[in-house]
Image 1: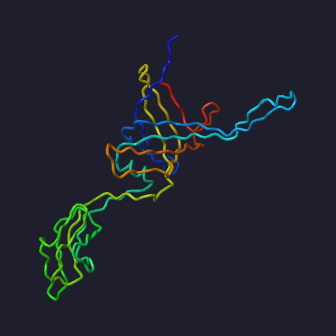
Image 2: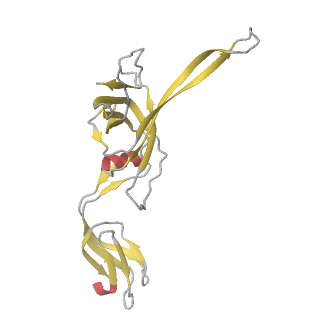
Image 3: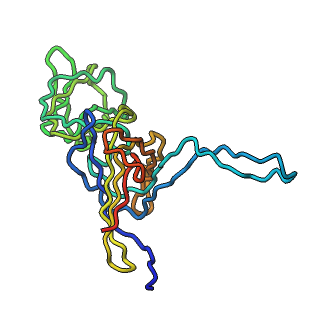
Amino acid sequence: MANKYLSFQGKIHIALITNGVAGALHEVGNMPDFQISISADQVEHHESQSGQRAKDFVLIKTTGVAFDGTLEEGTVQNLEYMLSAKSKDTGIENISNVSLGTVNANDLIRLGKYNLSNFVLVESSANPVTVDPSKYDLDADFGTVKVKDVSGLVMPLKYSAKSSAVTKIGLATDFTKEYLIFFKGINTADNSKVALTLWRTKKSPDMDFPMIHEELGKYKIKGEALADTTQVIDADLGQYGEFVVL
């Protein structure tokens, strides 16, 4: 009989569950590791007749299936998933005469807008004068300005500009989402195929999100599978999910 060794690789997909129905699958990209863990709460019984107090029965009370893995790709869907949040796309915006208040020389001011163009800075005299661009440093991508010379300028300073569309993702704003997880795998030991489905999962909100890296970023995620009572009840397969040998 040939040995049946296991060495899996494959693709992990997630699908947002809305009103109990899993939507389209989203491939999360390369994951160097992913695993499930099975746990159970047990009550042990010991006999009291032999003098040995031997364990003679174990009652399984509750069971659990957990998962953890490492994401490496920063798609919007992955970022929503990792940061427990929703995303929004902002449109092009024309900004007119927004006050920066009183600005001191070399103050770095965050404008709160990104990808700026047509930037104009004016002061507030009776006949407002446009500030010469040589007097300030503008980071148009990140929307910050540093006025190097404020001499002769009447406060408050005001700016006008045009900002382009960006995608914004919140932080820790939505802990209600549930996802189906689907693994399309190959056993590289014999090139057979396997699949894993977790019907309902909830990701733990606890995670570290490194912002400075020496190498490619790796983001650890973890969570739990929940019983799905809408699945066909099978005494052998249960309601957490299924592992399939194709």
